[in-house]
Length: 125
Length: 207
Image (cartoon, rainbow over all chains, first blue to last red; front, side, top):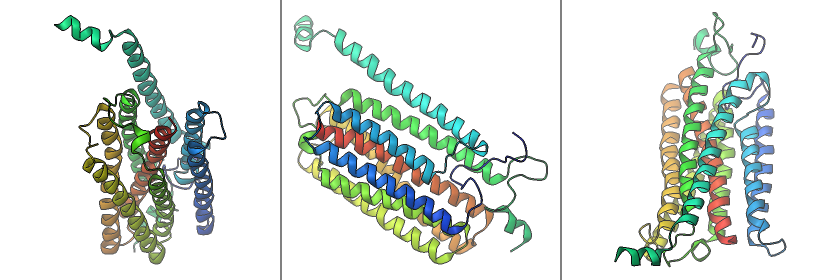
């Protein structure tokens, strides 16, 4: 990284902006996040869509809203001044995915392979 | 204010004379690493909750317990407080006292309202006998949501500390660095709440 592409602290605006532009960024973020939140709450209570698709839709909407928060509130960008911040975030996301999928996967298999509880009780007698 | 203080805040040079990153960038980056480790900790609580969500021991499940309108108000409070926290950090960088103190006060009121609603929900559940000892599902629920609530409590105390520090010491470079970290912390709490209301409450009701 050359000196002409200095780093930006996470949470800072990537380039020098006028005050009003900074407020504008937060306003766009607030609008998009509100929209996604309202859709999430609507979808969870509706019978308009196929039932089993609701959890998938909720996960997709939640990930989209987290992206909105990261870009408009925490100012994560794809610019060269943000490489360090985004790399750290990517590593965090990797660990989160490993913890979540690993736990669910292993526990589902353990549940599947466990002797039903009533049989276990009989064996202990 | 000395010349060094004037240039050390936001808008000052991003690199020191020897070419290394400025202290603001290093402090912000370090705090970002801490926040990511906090998110990893929350992911462990989320995984626990997801594994135990069906283990209700014959007791109530999320569909019986969760009050969606209440969660909607909580979400609105936290989202708006994230927005006003952003306004407060703009105010701090611009050294605009009205914007900084006003936005911080609104952030505090919204955060306190969120916390009050959550405490009301928790005490209502416990009073009905559906406390954390009722089932593995409720243990995981109280651990996960309560941990977020504790973070919000710590954030509110930090918010008051930041207002007092700016009042007592002014917009010094080190105070502005703390304000940067506080903003990161508060926005990250909102990101975790997005996962919480989607996975715990809305999926619990839709199930």
